[in-house]
Length: 581
Image (cartoon, rainbow, N blue to C red):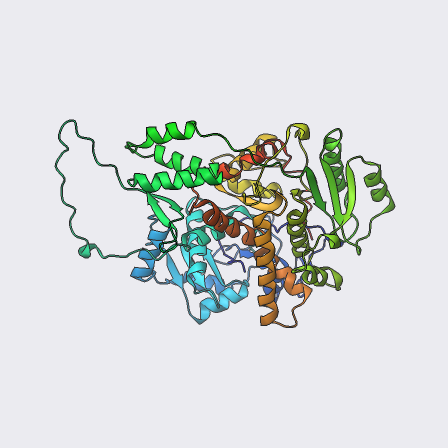
């Protein structure tokens, strides 16, 4: 489940893409433009996929008039305003110290927690377990755990960087969904900071004074600084994985040589980069570098030359089909083939079917033929009844297809751009990290990454340079989605993902034996979307490569196989802004 937040000037954010028959969001109890009472807010939150973000409006009643840009009427003061007018309370000392340590020394002294009955009512009003506005975090029912607090503290840090953008409802509300880069970043950061052991906390007066060291005699090397490298070698049966510090040459060499034997060149590049960034550098580094330069490179197998698309429901749009056919054109005179997956309930117009059949290098496939038995019944429930959960169904289908056949999956709003498939031969092993794409969903989603690099926001149609800048930033910082995935057949990550989805659905069924497709629709972003995939990828990097955490700039070390796609694909197309479903 996502941890929603409430923030000043937050942007309208959108959900993972999968195209249904009807693109109208069904929000029972709320009509666009109608006054938003508590029931309406809850209905809107449910329709938005459990990711409502309310933006605070003026603290006092606003008098509308000509040219103010708002419809006639006044903004109804809600419990949210009352709670945020309260003083709140700082975090308890030990909790604050723990969180500041987990967040690498961040200062949370200004953070105020709002709890109690009124806070819970306000959180219920916006359909959230917790929400954030500036340095105020409001805790609702089910939001008192440390993971949720870490997620909200991530939003505090984001909002310190400046306004987080947004398209306001006439009554001061904006809608966010879990695949917004800032939401994904906050959840991913929460997973990362909460994974380790609780830091050792000492009060200032319990720390003994640091003795002053005499200057090293002339000609004697200073001691190597001990720095945690945040990697671990396998250890043995009794010890298990062992953390590696920079001053332990034996452990560093063991980590590097183990990675060499396994063919994990990404882990080697990462630890060498971290060692080279130290000042002073370890004395053993030149010798280690020499050994690595003489090691033979190990080739990896090429992934199957397949590009998969999914359309379920009916009535594929012209813009979406144009994208798929554009890929088919790029595949001509190569060994790449395009698979267009649908299911036996979906309907296709005669004209669209004719266009597909006339294209070379493209073939219709049935999703039912690729579904893993662990999730087949869930796909059926998501697509068979009167209420559909198409995003979740599409997520399930793509993981199953990729696990069974390998290759590349792309949402239908992604264009081939300038890619040359003849020169695109990504190579991955079954255990390698999937190729992933930057989390760009529509024009509005560009503004958060552009703001992060100090670039001007999008006004009107985005330029190609703005898209490239945003994509580069997201790729460098791990801002990935599940709208583009490349893997080897029998990918370990896809296997883990299918298993995790199946386990998540089973838990939901135990909690609610009468679970409906509407329940599946609401759980999709957290159960099957980026919020589920990205933490799993991080866990996989830790277990398979011994890397406990990635820093900004290091994510690309695990994405080298996708360079051609990243550099040449069209991440925004006319279909990208068609997100109403």
